[in-house]
Length: 334
Image 1 (cartoon, rainbow, N blue to C red):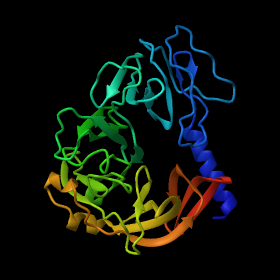
Image 2 (cartoon, one colour):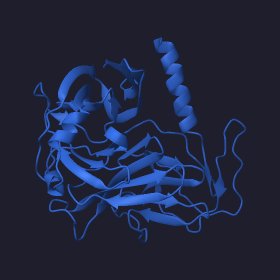
Image 3 (cartoon, rainbow, N blue to C red):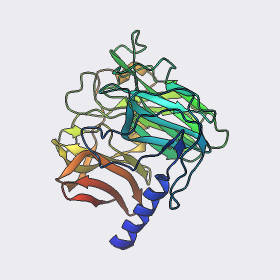
Image 4 (spheres, rainbow, N blue to C red):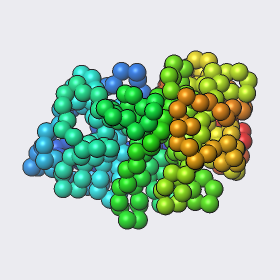
């Protein structure tokens, strides 16, 4: 596959994924350029008359919010749960965040627990989103006044699974780790229809290396483990919000190494995750066991956090990332 053909394929996929929805009188904003500072979006307010979308846009569904939401959308954290639900991260003022679900009837629910939305409060977030057969999965962390994990203070992790067949949303609080290392940056398929939820720790973590939890096909957590804070070449790993993909029974991880601007590809076999994991959820606290193998450096000018979904043809892994020169394609051989 040529570089040009691949770019067209990826751009077409991104356009399809970014098809705008209409919520109240607000059409989905154009995807912003990744930045360390969220780009303001219009406040979300109720309306009885949806604004028509331009002729070149597709309205997936329309509803009217039953309350006014303060603040703005957080960039790059807005997802469609077909056929008629939306989940996104709200910045409720000049700071703070809430993970928010919009239902078909316009009702607003905060995740993972429903609470009143207050301006400038840091309550919950969404750090990762993945699609696997039959499921859309996402997760993040929630403020925890009474943590269910020994190292969760002040924020504990959760993961949400949305069944594309039953349209049911299941929210599971992971009883170990913290938002610092078990924040559901990526969800991938495991062995025998298992689901693996992977966090993302970066330098400065106070609760251990990047954690992972293996869920059975019935979405019951069964095994837990952690990754080292450095790879086989001694590089310090930045894995927060970094995408991952399974190819040929290996977990490939995009990582920042030594700097948040240097991007590399790392690998760990799925078998290692199973053999090194155990059923003690407290393993997610203050451990760093599995050392990823460094493969190659992909870029030296990454705008940290500006990585879009990755794709594989079975021979190479491709990703679109945002650099000092704009959007570029990175590639690693598998």
